[in-house]
Image 1 (cartoon, rainbow, N blue to C red):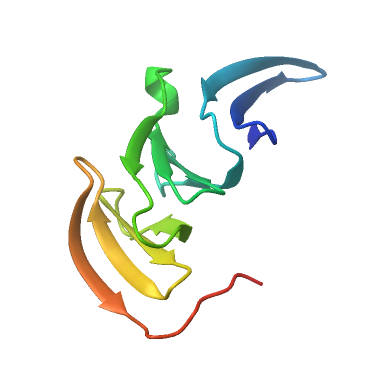
Image 2 (cartoon, rainbow, N blue to C red):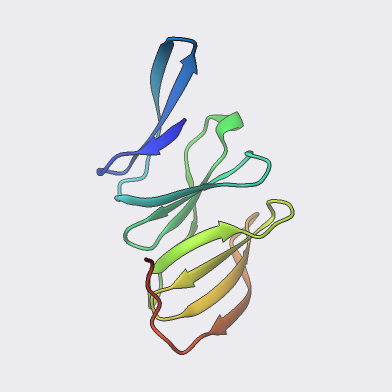
Length: 120
């Protein structure tokens, strides 16, 4: 079970029967707004309140890697494009939808919806 705390810490609960152990996985240094696993559970997308997107690979137990940084408008949400886990799609508050290559953070495509976007 992965979860985040207000101060930007990414935690993992290792649950075995009635026993559990809590581990700190990464310190994002920004409040986390959402966590999304890839379809194969190999990569976790971490989106912050400030609009930055990180990737975290649980099998490698390393640090979270900054993939996308908010530019003119904060990322409101991000998710994987399926099948696979090579690409993700993001949307900004200003209504810009973007497709990203996860390996190096290259923006492959973008579409401006010309409306402000909100999450309900």
